[in-house]
View 1: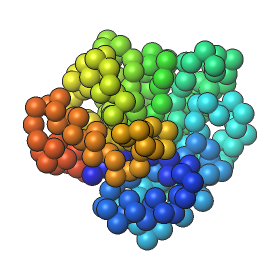
View 2: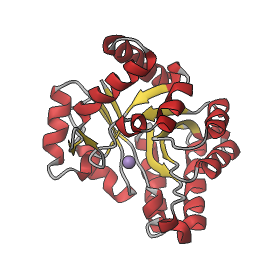
View 3: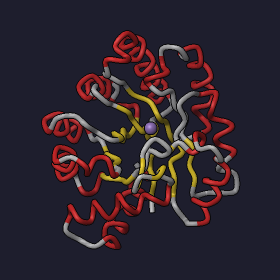
View 4: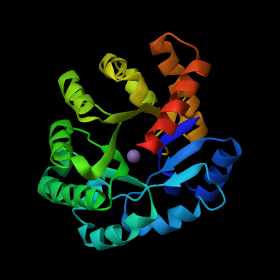
Length: 242
Ligand code: MN
């Protein structure tokens, strides 16, 4: 199973979650929210090749942590993955929109200069500006839009741009979300939990709970969980060859 967006470092006992995820053979993209969290979080992947660590600067923190961009640049050569990065258009972060965009543009440029990366991207309430920023930075690498909540038309633009998508259980809770997932190309979808910020059956989601997203995806695709899991694993292998 693949959990392509999980904040391992934000669980109360990150080492225990990392060990259990590895034990259960769950491949995890361990995203970070600040460059200063990257090295400590990378240590969770030591001896656990199923865990990949991404360097990120979350849009909610971007304005106050922009001084960490030089650290982002210096650590970028050490990983193939970038996230969580992107833009947040919520009213709560309205005052930081310009700063968020500056940080995101810097990150996309750095990724392009480094030859491209695989990026896990947040775009809540900001699908349009996120897509436009990606359009201006074609060399940044392969964008994977996490928990995408834009319109069907924005989804179409993202697909045309070559974006991938990672989907978790909350996307299946609304008909809008299910509609979006059903329009995503089958060969560009990955599963995610976004733990510990989401729940599975009223409990904090852990990487192995990604099975629930697989089951929901299987239901939507009218196929078995086994076939869906095989498809997602194949997608993940293909993504790493991009
Ligand atoms: Mn997240």
